[in-house]
Length: 215
Length: 315
Image 1 (cartoon, each protein chain N blue to C red):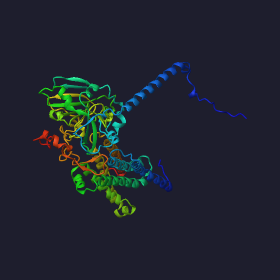
Image 2 (image 1 turned 90 degrees about the horizontal axis):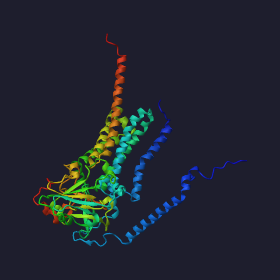
Image 3 (image 1 turned 30 degrees about the horizontal axis):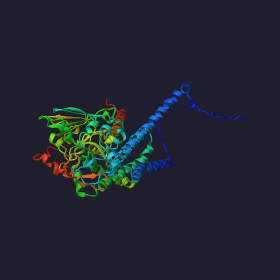
Image 4 (image 1 turned 135 degrees about the vertical axis):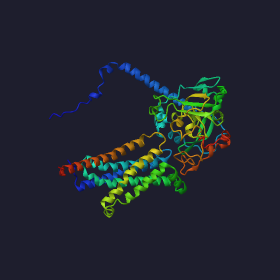
């Protein structure tokens, strides 16, 4: 059974989700205001915005499987917004790094990006997010054509993977959290493979049924 | 009209019969508890009246002139994986550590091994105040007023033999007191080590306190090592054993990731960690980064220990 909603219901849900997506930022701002960011506030902000970037990437990647498995097609209407929030938190994360952490020391930033694998990987993931954010409008979908647009936006699989590697390579020894993200990512990508495989199986069996038998 | 009113007494509020009949014994027990609590409170107040434990500690010429990091930051931002890998885990969870009674056993290649009781150990030499820089391998630093005396005072009393080339430090490993060691993040117990001449260097401090008081649990109570010219993880916390060895001790971080954490681990801005730069550091409480100093600024005192050594090879 498909769980349908009318457009005004979807609009209301969208507004609620929009506000919910701002809560992590609001809490961070509140902590900063109350001087509760701990002994190393810049590290805290970097960690927090990075964690939320990964979380929003995972939520965005969960939309398609959830929509299919729960038969809730309207979930698709939230995907663009969630993806843009992933980009939003990634931008905050990146800004924290170049502004608060490095204080625009271009020499050091370039050296970091070139020499430190975890920064190289994180920086690449951020760069890859930019064209996706830029082509997120309806007009851009039309201009590119659905097929090419979809092909471009599959880059999000690579971005998610690079994001998890970025986290994995920066921790010293306790890799539980990056592994948890890795596991979630593996499930979300694995589900897609299953869908694809079953889709193929269905199409090919349908073809087999329709195709005339060679006598 | 009959209005049904709820009973004034909830069933949950009714005293069980056994308890009611034993109310005198109950009152007596409670009285004892209250009295005990009052005594304990008195004890705490007396300790406060006497002031800080090391308030008479003499200032050391080895102290640096930089402003100490606030006490709150020193005691809430810690790496002490025995209590969890988060920076605030030790402050949140180290309450389970029992720093007394405590024994530190000195053993291995020496003529006079000994199990020291903590109180006896603390009277071994005059406790000084030493304001040292602390540089973490992660790229942050602090300035901490420690209280302790040179590690050499303890080591020389054991009369190490000619076979004693290194000193190994072993941290307590008790999962009842240290919840973090239930996870195999490192190979417990935590082991650190120094070469004999490093351990005998006057800067190497056997430490019992900070900011004039006994070490808070999260900072390695009741006794730890402080080696200011090396990355923080070389300074083992809550130690129970000091052992003289002929061979280089197998240290915890070196065993965990050998290509990232060497045995020497001297602070060195020219030798990067494979995954991040060591050229700069963020002093806790400051906004911008500052340049990291060779041997954490203690080069004048310790550089000679490493004369002729390739510090890129012996990182």
